[in-house]
Length: 168
Image (cartoon, rainbow, N blue to C red; front, side, top):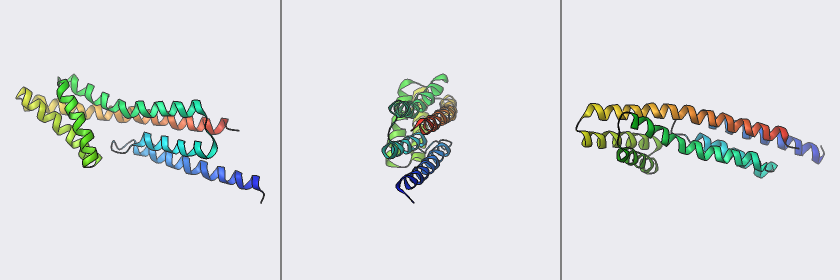
C-alpha cells in the first residue's frame, strides 16, 4: 500500500468517525440536557484540524451553535412570559438553571429553573394556579426549543456534508 492509499483510508475513517459523533449529537438534541449542538461543533472542529478548514462553513457552524445554545433560554422565557411571568422570575429561573446545571446535573438545573419560576411567581402573585401555569408554559417553551435546536443541528450536519463534498 502506498502513502496515497493510506491517506485515503485515513480520511474515510475520519469522516465516518465525525459523522457518527455528529449523529450522536443530533440524537442528544432530543434530550434537552445533552449539549448536542456543541458535540456537533466539536466533531466539525476535529474534522477541520485533521482535514483542513473551510472558514465560511466552519464559521457558519460556529454561529449556529452559539445561536442555538442561547435561543432555548429565550424561547423558554418567552413562553413563560406569555402566561404573565415577571421578568424577574424568568431571569432568576434561568440563573437557577445555569447554577443548578453546574452544581448538580443538567436535570438538576432544569428542575431548579422550573422550581424557581414557580416559587417566585407564587410569592409574587400569591396564587399557585397562575404560578403553575407560568411554569407549565416554560416547559412548553422547552419543547419548542428542542425542535429549534434540532433543526439547527440538522443544518449544521448538512453544512459539514457540504464541506466534505467540496473539499479537494
